[in-house]
Length: 88
Ligand code: SF4
Ligand code: SF4
Picture 1 (cartoon, rainbow, N blue to C red):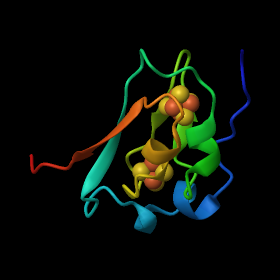
Picture 2 (cartoon, rainbow, N blue to C red):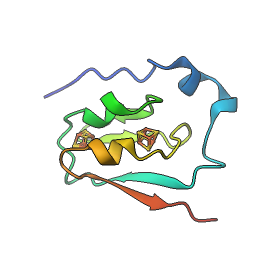
Picture 3 (tube, rainbow, N blue to C red):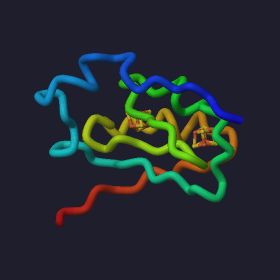
Picture 4 (tube, rainbow, N blue to C red):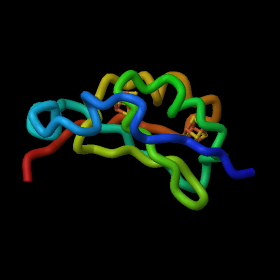
């Protein structure tokens, strides 16, 4: 099933570089591509619309993800795990 998941519903998160969160986020979501069934629940709940549709899974734009963990909580298939950010 193909869904049209626009990734530009929140212009603040998507377009303004000063809103990038990668420098200060403490946790990041990791999507298990094998568990993801493309139900789009994470896309619906993400408060900054940084979930994007890939061919066989939904992924996260880590440039604007703020690490709130709502997607991981709401994913009905437990395909998203929050992991701690580590310094490079
Ligand atoms: S909510 Fe979970 S299963 Fe549904 S699209 Fe997002 S990651 Fe995939
Ligand atoms: S952690 Fe929060 S901001 Fe990041 S993708 Fe999930 S719901 Fe969106």
